[in-house]
Length: 301
Image 1 (cartoon, rainbow, N blue to C red):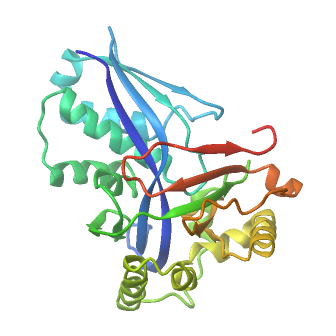
Image 2: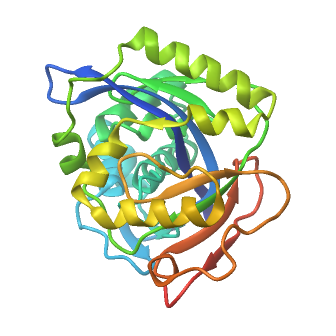
Image 3: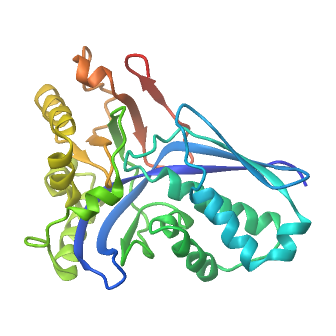
């Protein structure tokens, strides 16, 4: 076996609505999601026994989506797992707790890699079923490009032939708990699935024509109001960015990362940012169309 390398891209939620509470305790969602070119880089080497190592500035819990993926596959395919041990090294570039989906993307990348490495030839349906048991957002990353996701994130519809977008992204140094955010969602003003579909359809039509000004007006994240109540600093970050730039900033997912869609003029939003922005990780990124990663750091991050 030679070394296998997989890129695990991050994601941006352009639209995210909660459409109800499920009997299993999860929330039903409807979301339009784009993959972007911030990557965790995953390398798999032959080894005497299977192990996992994370490299990066963040402490990853011992029980994580990668270990869950290995446990799931080892349970399903115990003979193969024993015969073909390996070492997984996850080079973390996607900040945890940022709403960028790094943990879920890692799990999907491992699933795809082991499907090839072990020659088990699982079809997409089987991979999606396994992915859904590992985590709600994991199935999303088994598909290329932008997608609409529903259910608890396990129902995925790819959207084809959408043009690439550019984003300006700021990620604060602290992490946001997904469990806490979803636990504080109010069901008073949520939309139903039909309304969410209509809003996404209009947003996609603006995307196809690259009408960024209209897209900005249609961006939505139901979890944002909850997150801003929980963490006042994110509200301050958004306010400073919007006042300084004249652009609309949105929260992505359930984490602390905030983004704006950029026009293709190469312009940096803030030339001399205040301290609260300098403490953030700053990325100029674009849709994941096999382009390279580009990141800048402010401050000491």
